[in-house]
Amino acid sequence: MIRLILFLVLVALMATGLAWLADRPGELVVNWQGWELRTSVFLSVVMLGIGLGLAVLVWSMLRGILSSPASLSRLFRRRRQKQGLDALSGGLIAIASGDRAQASRYALQARRTLPNEPMTDLLRAQTAHLMGDRATARRIYESMTHQPETELLGLRGLFLEAEHEKEWLAARQFAERAVKLNPKLPWSVTALFELQAREGDLEGALETLQIARRHDQVDRATFDRRKAVLLTGLAQRAEENDMDRALALALEAHELAPGLVPAAVIAGRVLASKGSTAKAAAVLSRTWKKSPHPEIAEVYAFARPGDSPRDRLKRVKDLAQQTPNAREAPVAVAEAAIEAKEWTEARRALEPLIEAGPTAAVAVLMARIEGGERGDTGRMREWLARAVSAPRDPAWTADGELSDHWAPVSPVTGRLDAYEWKVPAERAETRSAHLLLEELVSMAERPRETMIDMEARPARTAVTEAETIPEPAAPAATAKAEPERATSAPTAAAMKPAEPEVVTAAAVVPVADSHPATEGGSPTTTTGAASRSLSVQADQRRPAGRQEASIQMVRSEGAATSAAVSERDTGKVVEKPRYFVPGHAPDDPGPVEPTEDKAKIQSAS
Image (cartoon, rainbow, N blue to C red; front, side, top):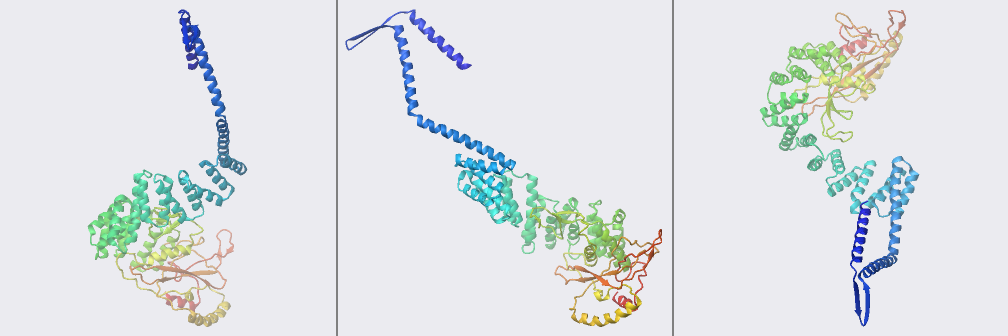
């Protein structure tokens, strides 16, 4: 529209000018070399305009003829570029839709029409991925790294290929090259950080974390948490050989994340060893208020060397008063009271937890109380039996795996800060009774882990496989079996190697058909074709004063006889299995046993 208006204005101006010349006639005379040319001014102006137009036309024609080869070349190039761009677009769409044939055809067309285009190499590499030809894809990515404009793209492709093949060393090298080229790229910094954490390179991960924070790739809270975890891991490594460095790292981590339990534990332990009891107590108390944990209570109790068990109990009670609603507080008090042999105090601390439903650890503590205060092995076994089916207690868990100790990275995936103090998920197929008994009896029998050397518990007589309780057999079968066992026993004893000193702990294995013992009565159970016994072997004493116990579940073979129990409603006679251990549950007279076996059991217990 604007062009049309300008054209009309120009025509109007020309018409006005010609009219103005026509109204003012004049004569133009040209005299040159004896020649004289006479014309009017109006005609001379018109002829001049026509001449200029003819000159422009001729020049345009000459220029078009001279530039026609280049024009043809540009025309062909534009057509080729259009075909290449169409091939790139169609190829990317085909890859996204999973059409291998179309993607391959478009990749060949793009390579023919746009051989030097970076997007062509990317299309070819993605097509090779789709076709399953990863070797070709790696070759293309490698060629892309030789060009500055596509080097980062090639490095990312090679990194993804190495990650797919689980070649972590090569993947780390590609990520490091990408970080050096452009540290602002989030993928390269994140990948390098994760790989360094996976490999345990905590110092390198700390440097990469600083790069990420410098370029605003992580927020402040995430940065502080990750840095605290890395510093705690370094302090954990340095604690044994360089306590000063471990203390500095742990305190820095504690300032960044006051709720991080391992950092406070390491700092408190080192401070206590240096005699800084007040500072250690302050660090531990600060973390206890945010994250109550048994390790904090333990280190807090032993923060002052030379304290008696009663003094440690007083310290733990003061710590527990800071978090009266935390479940860990009464448990810590009960453990300290058991060590101080304050049985009433221990019972009082556990009463609220028992009323709410005891967990496995609470049941084990009650077993320790019954065994330590009254020596009531029956009640002790009863509590251990309850611990088998009781809810589990929190533990250090990372990606479904349990651990006795915290670590900065997960042993399964290598993820940083994966460990959580929580109740592990129950898996019925893996939580078998004998594994739980191994854990629970070990907890009941071994002394509490402390920072100072503790006196070992006196060992008791072991119950060996030969002393397990057999099933009552028929008279004839028993008479026949006894001589055979008497004959074979010396041979087995001669072949059996010497066993270390052992500590025993017995526990009843509950079954669905048994009923719990009640006051003044015996539990209603039936005998079966097999019985089990437990033998607990104590390991050699560790330097830190720790003892561990392992339980062996021994199934004794006996004659296939059982007691008949009449059902109340139908009157049918059925056989139900009964599981028991050396000794009997409270108020349970036990099965009728041969005299010789009974004498062996009594001497063993």
